[in-house]
Length: 89
Image (cartoon, rainbow, N blue to C red; front, side, top):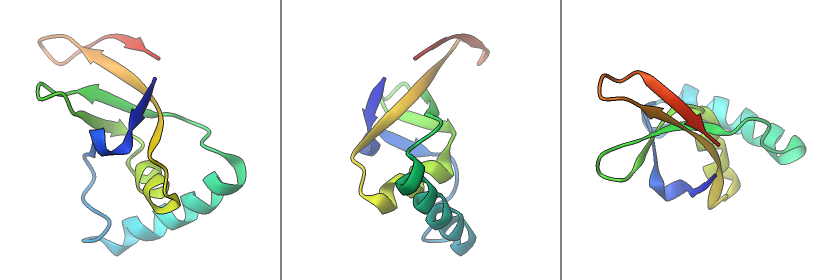
């Protein structure tokens, strides 16, 4: 499914606070611009309706750098104990 980047929240700290995250995102942005996004971000839905990124935070920052407004994600659905129930694409 596609989601707007503004609906996503990375678990990784902001690249504004950690320059090494920004450098990784810049390299990924170059690759995504050249080859496209090869792997969707993996997210879980929070009770407030937002989505936390559990895999792909660097790709998320790269997409922000490139000016993307939305991207493909895979939602992991967790049960009440935090275990994966199923995955919806």
